[in-house]
Amino acid sequence: MNYLEIAEQAAREAGVVLLENLGKVKEIEFKAKNSLVTEVDKLSEEIIINKIKKSFPSHDIFAEESGRDSEDSDHLWLIDPIDGTTNYAHAYPFFSISIALEVNGVVEVGLVYDPVKDEMFTAELAKGAYLNNKPIEVSKSYAIEHSHVCTGFMHEIEWMVEANIKHFGNFIRRARAVRRDGSAALDVCYVACGRFDGFWELGLNPWDTAAAVLILKEAGGHITTFSGGEYSIYMKEILASNSIVHDQMIEILALED
Ligand code: IPD
Ligand code: CA
Ligand code: CA
Image 1 (cartoon, rainbow, N blue to C red):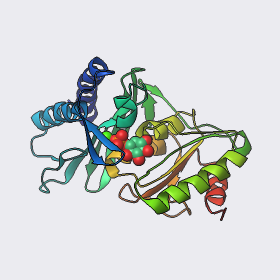
Image 2 (image 1 turned 30 degrees about the vertical axis):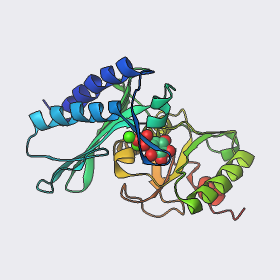
Image 3 (image 1 turned 90 degrees about the horizontal axis):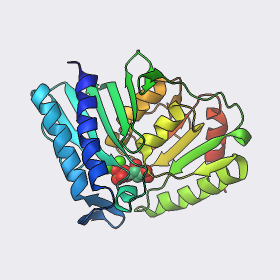
Image 4 (image 1 turned 135 degrees about the horizontal axis):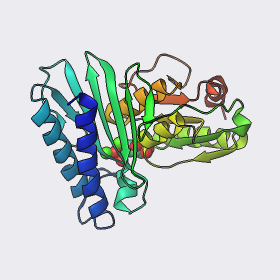
């Protein structure tokens, strides 16, 4: 079985557990004031790691809750067992599982799974992007005034809070509508399939973005830093769009107030 097939099996197995436990979370721990982790995050991560390790024992794993297991392999799996834990903990049905495989520093496989809607977003490098096995592509929206955009807020770092409020205000004034859905991986996949025209966020981690970024690129989208610079999943700012409204989003992010 190939990498993507194993990742899909792992995500579906973990997805069943997420649905079974939705609305029944008992233990919430705090990594920081508003950074939650539930027993289901840990269970989901264990299921995914076990599945991958069974198929590819020599590969490295970098998962949100358990960290990096070793640095021996040129194959690295990046795993977010629940992207949108705050939503999950409040039984708000918008969250996902994100699994990506990086080979020699290049993400070659990406999968984001929404178990609530049973939507599986997938991509392999240079092979296109898919939603439930059907090809997807970004929207053709050409003006920010007609665009449906999304963001996320990191609320632990004060300068980021201030920047988020400023950017949010500037987009509210110019875009058709602004959303804050709470699962960065799914938000970027929504740009990939045309439900959103753009997305921006500060402070994300590689396990949030690795899979979705490949999916968006394969769907024809564009990803940079806020000022249009080259993006890497190891950076702390992401601007993702349908390509066409990208420059307009850069201009809005650069506004002073
Ligand atoms: C979070 C979600 C959220 C984003 C946060 C992330 P988590 O991931 O992606 O949308 O705004 O910055 O940390 O903690 O639920 O895996
Ligand atoms: Ca996450
Ligand atoms: Ca998570």
